[in-house]
Image (tube, rainbow, N blue to C red; front, side, top):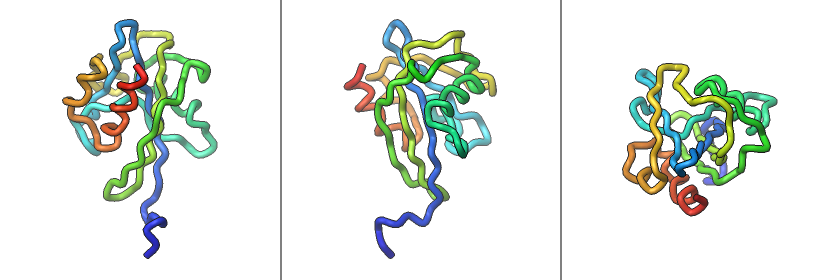
Length: 139
C-alpha cells in the first residue's frame, strides 16, 4: 500500500484560540459520552459541506459558546494532522481576540481560561497538543 494514501475518512475541523485581555486562552471540556470525554480542547467543530473554515468556526462559536465574531477577526495560526482509529483529523486553529458576548457552554460543557504556557500540562486531545507550541510562539 502506498504510504501517501490514507484509507481513513478525512474530517476537517476548525477551532479557535480565543484570547482574552489578560492573554489567557479559553478551553472547553469534551462532554461525557463523546470521544475523548473529559479532555480540554480549543472550541470549534466540523466544517460542513460547502462551508468555508471561517464560516464553520463562526457558526460553531455561536452554537457552542453563544458568542458572535466575524471572519475579519479570525487569524489563521496553525494546523494539526492526526490519525485517530476511525478517521484522520485535520484541525485548523485560528486566533480570535475580538468577539461579542460572554462565552458559556451551551451544551453544558465546562469552560476555563488558561495561560498559554500552562496548556502543556493540561489533558488535551492528541490533535490539539501540537498546536500549543505554535500558539505560545504567537502570543
